[in-house]
Length: 120
Image (cartoon, rainbow, N blue to C red; front, top):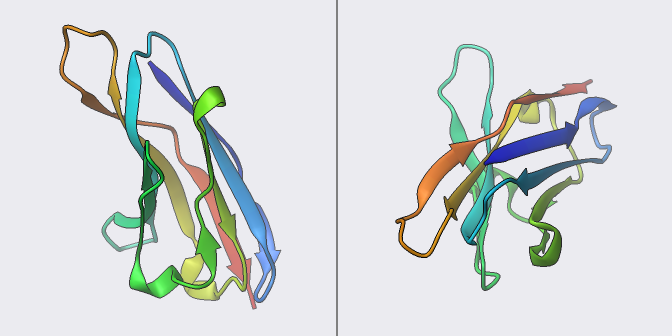
């Protein structure tokens, strides 16, 4: 199983940016997908997640500004980031709980990080 993240980049404060993450490989079921971020010198933190039935969870710092749409048919999750702030700067990592077959329990997978930089 691979999680391929794309998007990210440099944006001015107040602007918008979107990142996406596609899961591929031997996938039986994806229970949840989400995004974490890590700013320089800080611990990795949950930004947002979404379950297979659409239940979402957002960090307080991004509520009302970020949304996490998911395309179950394409095994893809997006992170739409609006009203970006400098504090949103960091490396964004895709995360998912995936079951690879009917006789295996789910495992956690991580994608490569993608840099998001918000300038003032």
